Length: 259
Image (cartoon, one colour):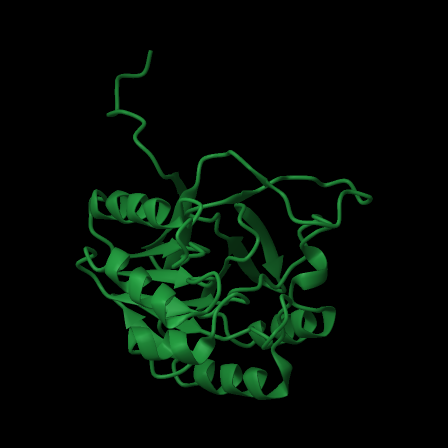
């Protein structure tokens, strides 16, 4: 079976303000890291919060910063995005969609709630997802969403993830769709792994800001960031299964012999 490679960037939070807090430079650095990869990926997916305020100017800038990539670029709305404006700016056919990325099938489902930080499926999105997965049960599939379908143990984030009912419904659905090799998400700005029923879940770090890791049940309720290196993810299809790698963004020098 042919190998496939999907690169995931997440949560760039592009701003068109005078002070963008380094967001544009961070996304440019991520693009350079992708361009240096060998082999080249089949596609790049940005799993939400493409813009910080959901403005046309942010999406215009994001498109410009992503334009050096010589592979298809797909986007998915996050809670900071305007799904309609995002889809229009990047030429998507809708907030949720399915597409091919080399030998992989990518199914992206919108989990955003207008005006809220949390996420949900609801009956309509679940029905769409069930029907879309049923259209092709043979091709190895990556299911993408912004809000992870799991609890992270981080007090500031878990109230704004997918709720328990949605997590249970998704887990049940995936028992019937074993072609879904992995679920990928963003939103949390940290690398996290877990499961949704029978399916692995991978949460991608942000290419810009890293969430402080605080696993105390009585930890702070507000989001805080820390100066850890930003990173991207590489999802590699090998012999029909998907393996996910985390790659920090930055110049760490060339490979050298093991000491």
